[in-house]
Image 1 (cartoon, rainbow, N blue to C red):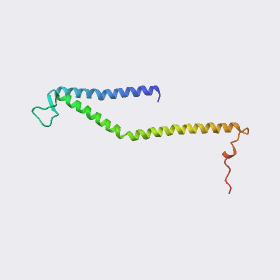
Image 2: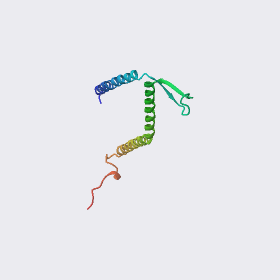
Image 3: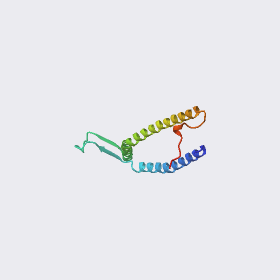
Image 4: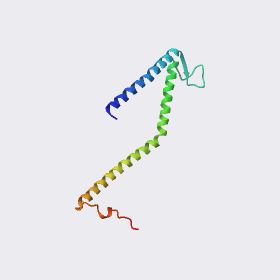
Amino acid sequence: MTDGGRSVSSTVRKIVAAFILVPLAVVIIAFAVANRQIVTVSFDPFSAERPAASLTLPLFALIIVLLVIGVLVGGTATWLRQAKWRRTARRLEREVADLRIEVDTMKRTASVLADSDPSGRAPERLQLRPPTI
């Protein structure tokens, strides 16, 4: 891709991001303004009246924190499930690099052999003979 293509792609990506992020930000702000009530989250299953561990915060903050935690847990689970594919991709990339080195070595060897023959012909073992009937 040319540099001009990259700048157009970058500009389009920024415009699309703006069309997605601006409305999303408006929705999140409207949600936060509409849900300012204070809620108490209790972590004590035995005492509802006097919980040993509780947290008091606005409802929108609780929901946003839970969404962030959900995204982190889901992303971590996905990352862990894809570990074998990343490992396979790294192994195959190493194999490709090794094979490229081997091909380059063979090409250099073939060119050295071709240069060492004064007649300019390929060595006898590399020539193909016509089929006999």
